[in-house]
Image (cartoon, rainbow, N blue to C red):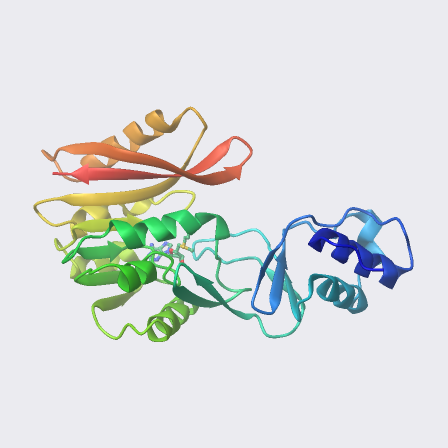
Length: 286
Ligand SMILES: C[S@@+](CC[C@H](N)C(=O)[O-])C[C@H]1O[C@@H](n2cnc3c(N)ncnc32)[C@H](O)[C@@H]1O
């Protein structure tokens, strides 16, 4: 007999496949959308599972979760923020997520997508005012650029990105969401491409972890002479947000002598690691 909740259904499917009533630890959480479930990193790992891992086990897991395909998260690494995710069942790693009325498409094993940043993606779509020019210095697959173009009356979005896989996804996302004008994709290192965007931005987005410090000069370069707002993502200790923010302000101002800068908001996005939070600092530069 199949029991009620999703966790019980997964347990029952795996337990009936293995012919065992008692199982080693199985995941309690996963992301599920369209025909795929993505397990958290470390799921079905450890010596209790080592001898049990097989395509047939993944089939039982997929059946328990009522999906066709199964992926598992990995560690996001490197300068192009490669996802580290792997497919466990199904060859095709292309996924489409619909969130806040925006479709994002990407190869799961090539590009990252942090479900925990959902509120920030929504906020970016809401905060941009009519007629603004936005520079997204780390646009990736369009995490922030797409909701801005779909939901605001932005004048133009400059998307900077150096990972070809991310750019392909961004182009797919623009088409899929019906956006055919009002953007420019700048392929390459934003510290160089910023030189062709100079002094136009009312708003700059710096969504790179663990830090975007190497591109602070580029942010100041693209910002309009009359100033604007910069959204800077980073990692800070709980209780240490102000100290982190003050440090960021000092470093930013170093690249624009005589400018005034003030922190207008600090938002916690999620816990990133034990005692490290992913936060976003909104800074106004005059
Ligand atoms: C994946 S997003 C980050 C999303 C999310 N905020 C996070 O870091 O968890 C960052 C993107 O910036 C790109 N990137 C990093 N450094 C860059 C640079 N100097 N110039 C252009 N793109 C860069 C990476 O390729 C990546 O696609």
